[in-house]
Amino acid sequence: MAKPATDLKAQADWISAAGEPTRLALIRALAAGEKTVTMLARECRTEMVNVSHHLSILKVVGVVTAQKDGRFMLYSLVGATATGAALELVHPSGAKVTIPLG
Image 1 (tube, rainbow, N blue to C red):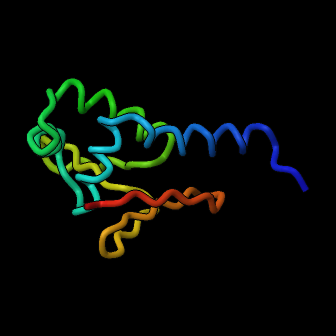
Image 2: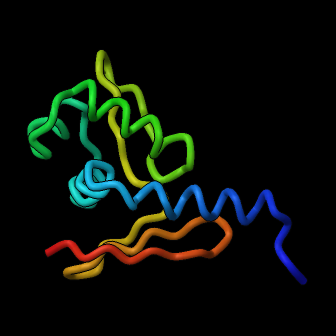
């Protein structure tokens, strides 16, 4: 049975979210655990406004989630497992993306 077009669109959006260099750097940085925008900006060597923009895209498609911690938002990966030198992201549909961490 074929997947409805909306499911395929959601999967494609989720997969393509990792296909941009800044978002890929953010995903790799979050593989070590939850972080704030400030921490991510420093680690990825980019401006906070740029990090916030890319995190909002990752949040919309379900790659990251945000949780309020006092004055800060802590971002973390959804459906992610770090295994040695690779990070595996799993979409609710079962689609998987493996990202090397080295």
